[in-house]
Length: 206
Image (cartoon, rainbow, N blue to C red; front, side, top):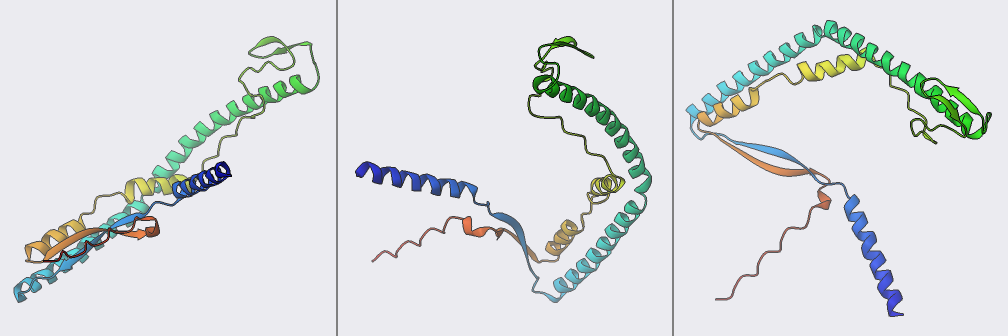
């Protein structure tokens, strides 16, 4: 009876461990808090920093818009190159598929025990020549490219990743005016999987 109880408890412990391993890890983000300067001059300085921040953000947005507007020639060129690679992969897939179908027919259909001439392999005997080890796994066809995907990829690479130091410049300006920039890492999602905070120590008696 004790052995059964021990086995059941071990199974429950294993299940809990598996469930804990499958839990979604928490996600974190950097939280920034701005403490304004106390003097009127410092506050006026911060207002100038905000004006410079808006101008910088507008410039970055205009730069991205121009980048997206001029991306089409590069997208078409990348699409043509992807089409050439796809055509080569498609032709290879057709050859592989023919060999796979022939191999399946030799294993389960006609020509059992008879020599068959296979291009690229010569005379082989059924059942199957297993030239590439495709017993039950047919080759997968290649995925055709699209102009929209190539355009989106280039926009992400060339336009969305363009350097834009507006925020860092603003924080430096803010601190230069006498303000404080305080950063902290906080949990923003799936925080329930975090371990509980340590209990506060009980005050010692004098």
